[in-house]
Length: 64
Image (cartoon, rainbow, N blue to C red):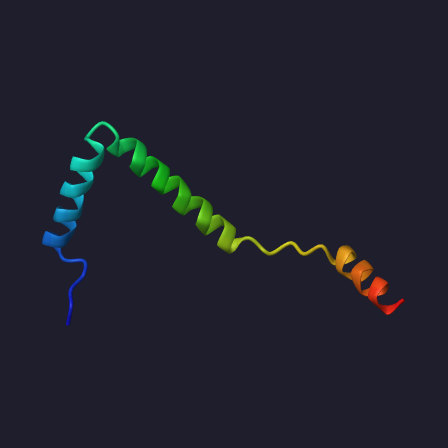
């Protein structure tokens, strides 16, 4: 079976990222990624807000 997240693979990915962006940009990139993940988790856990009044008015128009 393929082991996609083995240590050598992760080190290679880290090396490529360091070569592409440089070591000074890595903290900024990781902070941005962390904020994005945090916001995504908050959005998933929040209850959906549905505007029912708009949907009711749309159905009333189609009935007329």
